[in-house]
Length: 70
Image 1 (tube, rainbow, N blue to C red):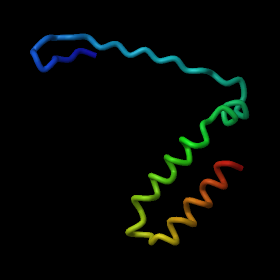
Image 2: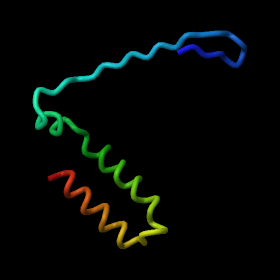
Image 3: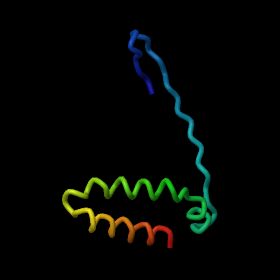
Image 4: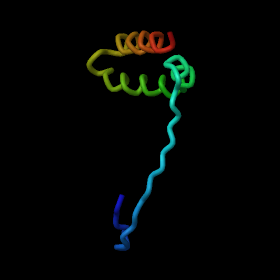
C-alpha cells in the first residue's frame, strides 16, 4: 500500500499475514477463541437494545451464545 506521511514522505506499507488451514471443520471450531466470539456477539446485539428492548436483547444474545458454543 502506498501512502504519504504527514511530512509529505511517500512510503510503502507491506502487510504480511499468515493463516492456518484446518484439515477438518471440527478442528477449526475447536481453535476458535470463544471469548472473542462472545464479545463480538454482545457488541453486535448491544446496538439493538433501543429497538428490541433490554430483555429481548438479553435473550437473543443468550440464545446465540448457546448455539455458538453448542
